[in-house]
Length: 388
Image 1: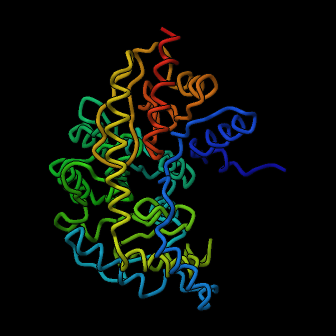
Image 2 (image 1 turned 180 degrees about the horizontal axis):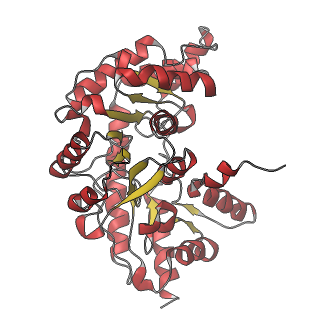
Image 3 (image 1 turned 90 degrees about the vertical axis):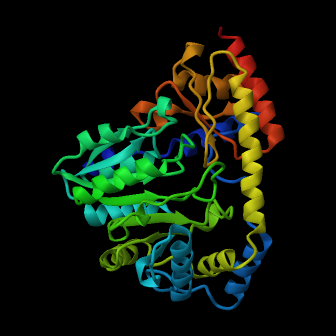
């Protein structure tokens, strides 16, 4: 069977490949500390699980509207209006099975072959993969360690051309944990407005903020109607397996995006939507506890990595990833990550998994217990020491 040519343009998310390799090693008897996968290690809060089970018992097991149930769309709009300081309604919301469809559907709806798309690099690998798959031209916006893993706005301005169709922003950022400062975000908004560029703002980690305040590019003048906000329930409420995310977008995009939902997945699971509604309406205590625990783990892993000769690590301001520079160990990122797993039983991701500017770095997800993080730090220290 011969695959279509377009399949060669479609990349992957390395975290799942490394997870599979780590599981194989575990099956062979190795003890592995998992710092590769980007999902909270907490259970979905009980009241959300109960709401999902009750919804199934009440008959929410059939098709629903492609853009989502009206009551959930309205509740999302209320939340986004309050937290981003903009005015949107349920008519601006499309609910999808996870956040990735919003990335894909946005590009399918807006990007023609040859159109250029600006995206953060290092960045979530699916951005570049999907840009290429739809025929667009990926244009990486380099994140500089010297700038706290943020862009140089003046440099980005030189990358804008008459073919620039879309700009992707991710703050807090995966894999770096960086947060775009308000002034830089405003400058990006100015660039988008002046050059008629649509912005896809990936804000999935907005609750995982340990310093400062979250700002959305949608809040700047004239940007509400030029921005698609991507958010969801996977990270905030430990609902990765429930597969539910959403996009908040200009009204003109809702019908085309809903049509893409109809043509691909029909709709998002009905009972999952009812669970998501409970997540928003119910107690937020557990979600805040999760964030507080992640902040504690962040401090443990950063302090531990900083003590290891050959490694330096900026303190992430958000998300739940550390992105240390390992160049002084004398190893490449890929050699470091593969060796650390095979020889020391610690799973992480090579920086190249997140783009060309990730070379010299590795990503550790601190979505694991403090005890396991400390165990991993001891193993990393020993691994590096043996190769000095």
